[in-house]
Image 1 (cartoon, rainbow, N blue to C red):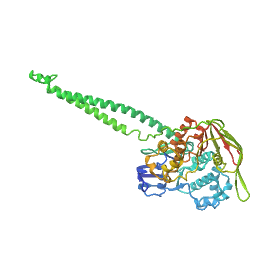
Image 2 (image 1 turned 90 degrees about the vertical axis):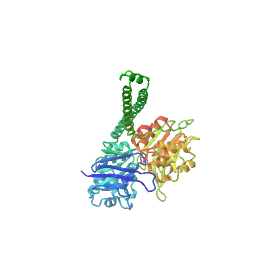
Image 3 (image 1 turned 30 degrees about the vertical axis):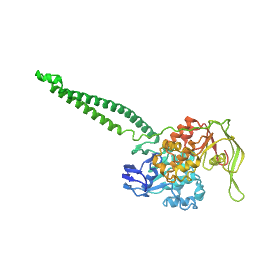
Image 4 (image 1 turned 120 degrees about the vertical axis):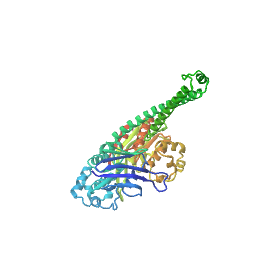
Length: 509
């Protein structure tokens, strides 16, 4: 058994307000298939970069294996794919490469094609295969599903399930369940490792959270009761103390009695009451200390709200025999899809599904008014308001105040939504270019939730979004039932919120 040992790890970015990690210690077995979870901005990618030695830190990281990071940057994408394999894993034999390609359900002819011509999903699969063929390495896989369609995710999950020795950062619940045997979780107050898949970890977390909340309620009652009892004992002790020199004590001494009312009796009574008070106070302090150890890892996930508008007629969208094609060289056009027909009625939530490159984003952009050449019949409701969340977040720079002003968004409402999505107030002061990919996506979703619209069109809204936030968004949609058209490859999310689906294929629906 080989271990990766992390001891007293402390790290913060230069100029940062706070530490990402503080005195963190744990161990990882290099034979594990380790799923890595945590809310956006907690440091998952940062930790992988620390393992790669890209940042200076305090503490120690020791390992007997080398680390390889995915996504892997190919320096020359004009090489054919087989050449890329050789550059990543020089000792790999051709039969090994062909075996890995078959496992990933990719046609072997991609090995003779320039790497740049592969789809993003094919590139993801080939790079994972190449990295696993490296010798004596432990693979750090950072959110591979963002370039995989639903079918691709299932294939890669099956592939990873046959491997050992990796950390997988992913927010796709089904994907994690299908391919990991341990979960590493960055919680609010600590880092923990549990054996099992994500569903097992989440069940245990819910059980622990429910237990701690019940204990917190019980201890609150106990603390209040003990505080009242301590005050009562203190009053009794004070009364007994003041009675030592009262009429009863004086009469008892005059008659030579040492019973009730005597100074000795009242002193003993006062002492006992003081002891009772101190005992109540000790028990109260113990309950307070016990209570202080609870609820530190409870994740706040307050319900989100949305206020969709009702349109006066239905359907709101109608598409008939839509075809989209692009220029593919002088005098040539490449057809992306054709024969696409569907409608969107009030309160419907339509999921557009299909592989990479089938034109899903193109149809959303077309409906939103972008100038995309097409043929067919497209009708949208007159005066219909659309709220659009694009797939790309790279344009987000600057501060949130300017962002809300340019979009005429209610800034307090916008920031309140971000707080519910686990943004700290410190994040509000940062430039958006310094946000994690998941935080940027949350900015776009929060902006959409601030808008009153007839139709919400979201293009892969969950890319990089943490699991708990995905659950919040699911509950929001199920509660408020907005009219939606969306593209998403998270199987659990689609099954939870979509009222109907359409499946697109290359060059044909």
